[in-house]
Length: 372
Image (cartoon, rainbow, N blue to C red; front, side, top):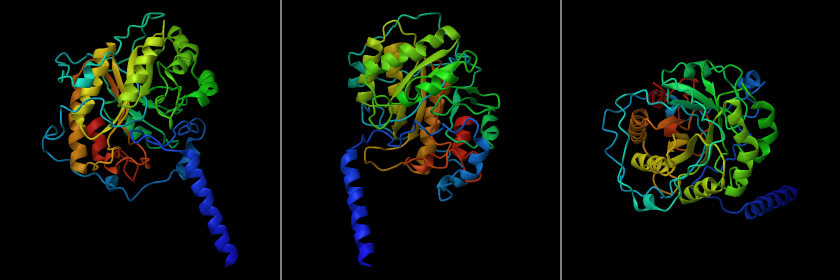
């Protein structure tokens, strides 16, 4: 018994020491490092079927009929776009203006919207590649090694893209456009080996480089990676999507410096991540990015999620948030692709009302809202 007590004391001391060493993390970002989240996708899809952990306790496990209430009845449209709503992801684009009746959203700018950020116009090294739009603006953020149920999601009428937070893509994309990503430093070798001419049509830049818990690099270092590994892909027919920062002031500042320093870079579209409970803040933030850089916009991670200590949205509020965001994305010509967060069994601390994957591996009702 004495030996057991001593073991427990030592274990608790180790945990305390680890906590002190690790330091604080931003409340605006998912703390899970996703650099390795899909590294096993290639060549290990069958093995992952038996290994994948399911969260059957989620309230999203069964499809709940969505409410008919208005989706725009909540949320303060005057919220400043630099408010601390948080982070996470990477997308693909379909520069689609196929809807002749598109009416871009033009919400009134907040005080932070008028900040002096550069109207970035980096010199292109070649003519911008086509985004390959098929009129489909939605994508799957897919960290799952198991692709046995991918066809169910790929068959949805609005889905055209897939990425995995890595250079790896599933061997069978079921007609979707796969989008490899250079997540950060530890994926450089894999990225170089895989992302060659003909592998894909789009490529994503680094994942939340402004966040210490994610790819974590200065704008100058981001420029160096872009110029060495991503920019040359423009000559091989790739459509280049910027790094994706979090929707807060640090994200805005990082992106502004990146564009200022990336002399001669080709950047075909601008990506961001959004975590917040106000759909109008999503619209304002995306509009600010477009007005600043005058480039097509991608969101590669987003969810109705509070990382600032506020109450989480109810399931009905999540449906309303989704309806507002989906209407905005679908009706805005400069918004190319959107990747909602949640096609996974473990939502990594995000409100489970955002789940897009049911316990039986079929789309939830929320997934149908986005993907058709």
